[in-house]
Length: 460
Image (cartoon, rainbow, N blue to C red; front, side):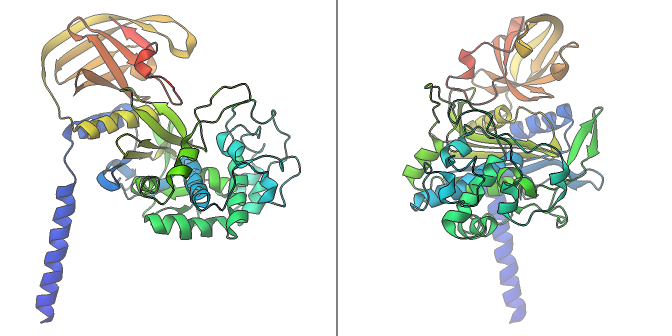
């Protein structure tokens, strides 16, 4: 009898495993492009997860989580979130807002009675929107060596006066999120990490998201790297507890898209979501394209996106939400690199959304090209070479480092991508037979579509 039960259990597991594999469609062009990107940018590994309508539709790792031991990257490897931690904190804020338990527009002292008097008048809307005037972080490095055990300790690290009158400028501040975490504690009556575990992580199924403690990592945590003279070197981990709410979590891409489900499944109310996503406005009427932490922008194809990225020692991360399609993509890279990760995510999301496969074009182009670069607000002229045959090509420019040898792929509907050391970028071929094109770099926080702006590099 026991052997029959065991066989039935084995059969159920086998079927369920097969179903999971079948449920994830194959994306060969995406695989080709991501693999090319890893090689071109010299990255150890990259992990990607995509969900739509609260269902995980794609999750895959590329490269290595541990180069030395050849341990493959998977979408379940835990990496540093860097500043994506800010939207994890904001999700907790959104839950409290949904329950009417917190007010974004009352002085922070309402929830944090021990706050330094020079900050007591600041409000959560300013702190999360980076218009409070607070400095990015405390000066010096000594405070980074300690493992802080309370949010109260970390809030007291910064004593500097405000840099400007609140709501008159936009200036990024990670330390401001220590105050946000303190307000969550004051509102909920629970320690920050406990509130997150009980009211965010558990309800949303985020089983692999937690405060990082570098002394308590496991084989589930990816090794982190940085570039030194174009070689990958293992990062020496430093403590993140001094900025837990702003950059100090570990997570996975699959957990991050699960977090986004909370914005559309009723976990966060529609009214609270609208508040979180709505752009802040300065006193002079300027909109910042930043709401309660979340940034509003437009991708290369004209789709509105809500997003946030992160970069810190050993990691580069992003999570992007497409409101129109209810689609989410999260990417985590285990290397500290200045990758244009929002644009990279937009283009990979396009491949998923359109399920494009590699398409051969009946072309064989090989031409010398002249390039005009507008990098760093400086117009310079360069020469290079353009090749295209079948379903891919190459743009070679010796004097522009990040596109010294950039593979090119056709992704359908007259759209192309260039694989560069700085990321996967949108390439508009105005006339491919005559090797004429425009390369766009657009970052984030845009009100208009990038293709309506001036391209960063043009060639013909």
